[in-house]
Length: 372
Image: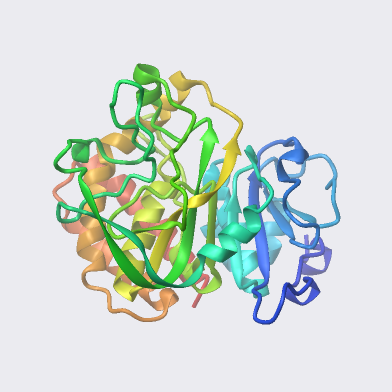
């Protein structure tokens, strides 16, 4: 496929203005198969939806004028030499959609999963959470380098419900403790959560089930002043963050698949660079309805290596990010991947871990090159 044969792609110039200074917006959804399109009824008809077509051309025709399919041939034609940075067959297939939205010049990009139901006010809530905040409710871990849990709902027996990706190493009452404090600054990424089928680790659901309610408190979104597991199924972010917000691809370790880390590990890097830059991450609303549960036995298998390999990965990321200077996100991410590669070489992690980390570094290097 040549560039002239690409599907018609959206332009910010075609979007209906929502008032002086209103940003242009694009929604990106990865799709391996046809979804029930009524899930997206709350997306206004002038907001383009770029579909990262992971069926490679087997989806039914676009049901709406604002839907733009991009199959593998179209992706390669658009990305050219940078096509090698675009993963397939995982949730990380959304990267090409983010890249297109960035390159076409949209001010705000919204990442949405194909099994998430948008609701009235969904778009306005995302846009209202981005930008300048003053004296917003911040949540800071008490422990150094600690984590914030975006779920506040507990089980009926009082046990804490932890979001997918919250490390087990930090799941004690003392280490998980947080305090609130006011914070001002610019929100560059808003993490909307989900109800119905919560985004928890598979093994947690097998043992304890789930409450179905994330417990989002009334009032404005909170600000995460520490590490936070960034689920990628319902987030909004400013255009300039795109080079540093990379969903990592699935890989295989001795025959086992490393999966379900794409947004969590990629988001960990993003948050590190946001902290360095001084930008904020908000979390809470808007809440989408998560409608699909993958068979839990399969989820447990897919998450096995993520649980084992997370902490050494975070150590490498922390050391690499500490050597990066604040600046443009494209420059920061490019510098980060250089330092990350050095960190992998000197890591004391097992050799098969280092091989996976190295492969992830190769993917990130290609992504960084796409913004140079």
